[in-house]
Image 1: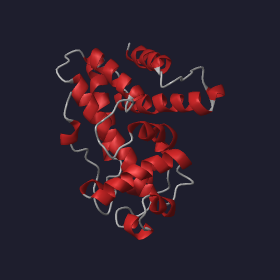
Image 2: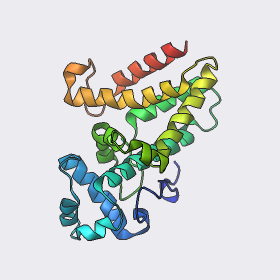
Image 3: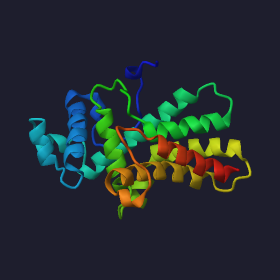
Length: 226
């Protein structure tokens, strides 16, 4: 296994005012913001509540993040960067593009079920946040401006990486990026429906068992590519 503590997940510096990974307080902010958003939901989460949780002040949190939206974008961006790292690590030296895509699909569905060895990241809680809250990072009126400022760079890099594998499998497929972004969104959407709106899907998620959704995504993607 790779030494995860030696790697750096790159997040655009324009998302934060001060890099939270560089200080004990910053890592504490990330740690407890994940736990608190998971506990309360993003709408009910505030910097005031976070400050109380970490026994600090709102002003100290604002030195790192301009708003709770920027903090959510940071968490989501970190997650996409971690997925990219995992894809590179787990598909390294695998010649078959089809096999690489199957590994990618598995990673996207089951990611962060295992420990990452980032001591300040609660992987299970972050995964739940991604399932429930990640679309709020870019479903905003300011999405174009934020995109121009590089807020969603890690998401676009991940999508492009998957699209290249799709094109390896079928160079004539005309929509590799659309299929890649569909894969990224549908997996999490179906997990969300299974957990919170079961009338919207046939899938059941029991004890983080995503095998039925994994099988569905493989069928969906490879049927398109054939």
